[in-house]
Length: 334
Image (cartoon, rainbow, N blue to C red; front, side, top):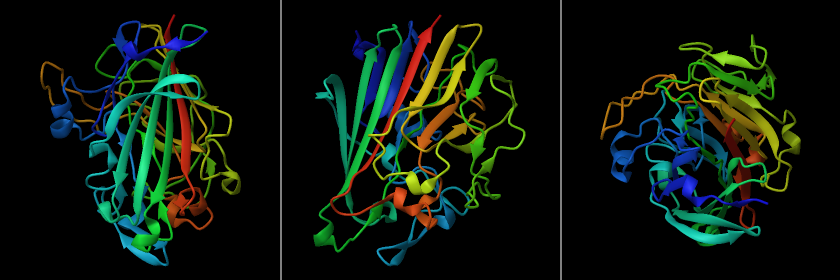
């Protein structure tokens, strides 16, 4: 029998942030001790809920939505990244509110993103449920569920918008300053090849020179910031993936700490990022965090899907429709 595990997690209203994920007393996610520090030092997006569109939108433009073009904030070279200059991870959600979800104890966060926020059309209500529990095997798990829909679309004259959510937590199983020594297994070798600005070229192919799993993450190499594909057939990807079975995306462990992490998701892809650009100074008694301070497995839709005709149906939301997704993190110590 599983049981609730609220004592193992800490959540914040800003960005519905996951602040703590405790496994046998060790916090395996990067973060800050106080909410205010997330406002001043969270350039890396530690723990944030990312939206309205996660990852990159090419040239900071949605080329065709409601029959028109929308210009977004260019905050990552020529592209728009993680919802813009002040995406959902920087917004204050309503919550956490204790609720029952699918027969289990959970917490709910909600946020209403107004029409025009960060350049996106239509008012969207987003709901985030976190269900923390100790499963029957004694593993600490967190299920993340997303739901988003257009509200007030008729009054605003909006026929559609675009939504693609993820969580940007950084995991560190090493108990040291970096992820060095972590054993990694990726449950796919397919990825989205990309251009010099990290925007996909529109194709799906095998990742070049992917080490055989499991492989060891060293102090500097291998270095990843790539979108890996779990479902290579975009025509079968629904707007709401929650009814699909969970698929293993990636697994990690560290031989020194004996900590393990599995990531499973209903999403068709995940961005695997080994934290090469992390740069957070020492603050409030927490040591500085630099490159490879943590790794991210950002379960997601294909990057820049809104601008690719064959992919856009996976992120375009019309009135009466819902974007949905589920991801599960499962961690334990030997």
